Length: 469
Image (cartoon, rainbow, N blue to C red; front, side):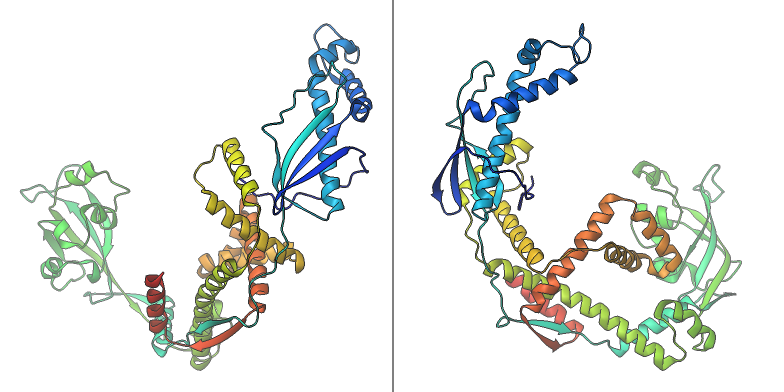
């Protein structure tokens, strides 16, 4: 169910009709429109004439259908269409004359229903209830202070990221014995209870590291050597996780059913094919060239640490700004007072919900959504906010880069080009750009105080705030 705020502007010639306006309450009116035969006769005749040229009826050539038949078959509908045009013109002229805009759609009066009869030249009176958009001011100013928490990068975070990069761009060497962090590549053969190879049983190539082993598994394997063979009495006690997880992660089974997992014999022979150890990259020229793909051009460790700190702090700023924006937006909605025609809107809400078949949204939720729409539209119009094509593309690139940036810019461009062919994705990026511009305006209207803090202190504060709410 949509909220029409406002309808598109319509420019009609002045329409001389008898229009009566009755005030039903704040921003709530009854509009009575009296239409005489002289007002609609010419337009009705022209409509019938146009129809006679278009309709196709068996037994008659196109354009040769008798007018009497056209009137009989389409007269009421044609007259209703012409009357509806006159009603719409009258309402739009009333709005234009009084510099008003609609909320929702005009509601026809249930007590003043109109029966259309094209065979009678008679006067028609249409009665509608309308709601009008109120004028209002935003309930925020520079006197309102909000805190933007700034979290600097810690030395531990920088060190952790450098270690990750060293592992990523390091070498992988085969070794004879496994140690913590090594990857052990093995062949697993399902066994019968007597220890013989199970006919048509599982035999897969797999891999694991020490972190995947339970205490029982560590005790069983002891020192793991290349070429070693181990008999496992119960594979589900050797590796961590539920039976289904072990079936997927260790036995390399694709989404096995519960019945298949239960049918697996627990005994397996495990032969070690090879052991691979990651040798972290040294902090040398080749390493700095490699990491430049992620962090921009860096030539030494000091520059890399500074760049990493900047990225971490930018991430932290984005995180805490989301909290700032949420707090600010909630305050804006609560502090902005808008006098709405509640009685009309409740009628319109019930009518629209019945027509759309939707019943999940409550009236209070609808009213809040309407209030948010009016506030957004006010800011959009007063500050002439719009999203250009370039801005939408840039938002798409950043969105995809956040998810797939580690795979390189070529892959990011490929995904962006593909996604931009989807209308729903383009609309989502358009909304993202508009939301950011809206928030930029709102932030400029209040006072923001920076406050340095640590990640732990910020997380603790967020928990306290959530608990208080």
